[in-house]
Length: 255
Length: 255
Image 1 (cartoon, rainbow over the protein chains, first blue to last red):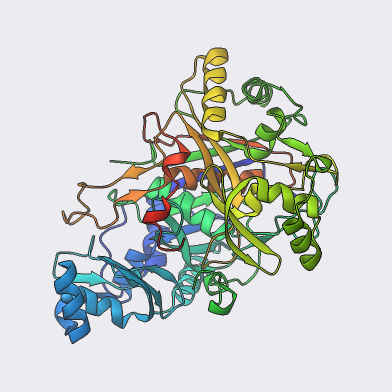
Image 2: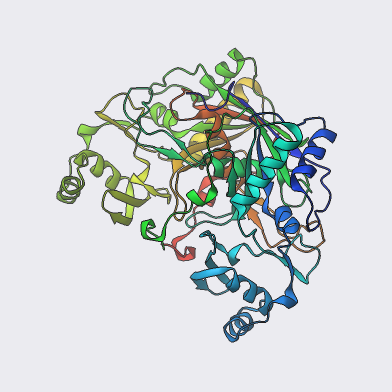
């Protein structure tokens, strides 16, 4: 089985998407930008969208004043020279604290994601007095974008929402998938035989995370490229979600 | 700063590389396959090579008979229905066991990588009686391949050696960089300002791991596509290494 249709992928960064405002239609912005750029949208495209523009459209860009710090948030913020309102926002987005060491606060979000600061982001959000929270249901957001693209273009695409997470053991952050629609997040090699006919030990690849990481290479962080189109990748078809990627705590060796 | 030169990447899987034999010249195989495929090698290409073919060339494909199981390996193998010689190989490649739960054996390799089974792989290695060990010095292997490509083509490229690792918190495995030459593994956003002029909170992206993950999308696992060329990505220039990606134990929150 070949992963890339003809052994070649194209990854196209979409420019010219305006600063997203609340209630903007992300699907419309993507279709218009792809059209203006002359690339269009095609069946089988995997479209990566950064969390940040979805959060803006979904009213998840919040004024810091909304977050009245608890005594715990105040104490920790004071000790680590953080903004206590940002700490409060992080705690309200979290179900548990996984690690709290010095200024590092790793929590589990309401979605089950394990990341620093619960995905609360103070950059690219219109000024110091705002923070961006993750979308409430990133899989549902991706499905809405996918449906909106199908409605406008007739194209059957996959949509992957990306965010930038750190990880244990390895320095540096990478983009991962926090929302998925129109594809399965995993490519499963169970039962397939390798080149020598031995059943593969490697069973399941999280291709959704690899697509998210690929998208970062064209998105960057400060380029105004919030969307990337991957063309030529035969992603696993089906109705998958990023929630499937979340490892249940009881199955995790590093809770 | 734009990550992709013109906002578009191409990722090309190289087919037609023969089964690699000990002492084969990987650079030569890559240059010949790229030429036969009509894509060639160009300045600025980032070339991902799967660990497995490098291990074959470097005599790291080993007979299982070489690994006389210790009593500890025998006991664990018996309890988990593993081949005690494979367990012995894993332990000899490791400096410490991080987690040993049921059949899952996560260790730190001599390189400092944290992964299941120390990167010892029983698939695609010519039959059940063999295992593939990671190259002794993947960064040096990448530098040799890079130098060999430069010698044959004059092209200044980056070389990334990939392997497939699991990770805490998220289901599924992804390809990561275990060797790097001709580029820096990280793109550093420290000091850059985002679209609103606020200093970015996200500072360092491990682009080498993202390139490795991208390469998996065209390599797959059973396709005979052991090499992928990424063209159009303006990777961070410099003399970097994958050993820089390894998080020192004292800096790791999940040792």
